[in-house]
Length: 202
Image (cartoon, rainbow, N blue to C red; front, side, top):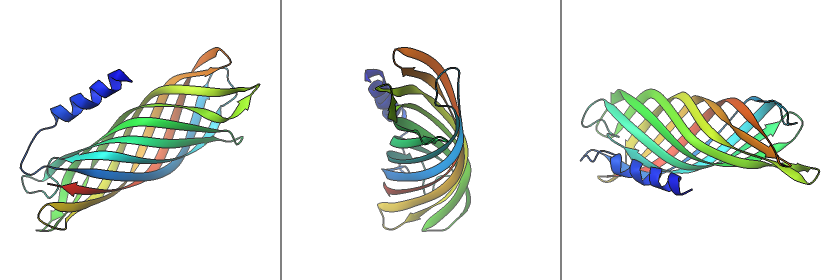
């Protein structure tokens, strides 16, 4: 946990400062499906997923004043459910870093419309809601995702705006599962849709 805090502080200090930049608070909802693979444990097969997160937002150029490119970083705390085909649900929490590279499609004095790729990295952990022989299956791992997002940033006043976006994302999760003193590696592949809204201050 200490290393995650150090990483978070380092990311904040590395963000470039600009007169055109904005910071804010965002929320995201999404869902999709995928597969869960492992070697020995019982939790294997198709999975459905849903998630919600709240994030700190940094946008280098939300209204395309400096150029037609912007970098957006969302550092979020995420709650995610993974429901297996036999009804077992894994409840997880994650620290996620979503890096979006936004290219302006069109703009005016009050709004920009953009499209761009997104790269996600994160750390995830949780356990199943059901127990076998008195033990829940616990899991922890690393998350990596690639996606594409489209959105708009709307300036509502001189110092405040809102951002709305939606997209598609493919995520891979790899790590270790533990049950009853036994450990095993696992892999999860997910495809999902997401929508995001944020308030920006500059």
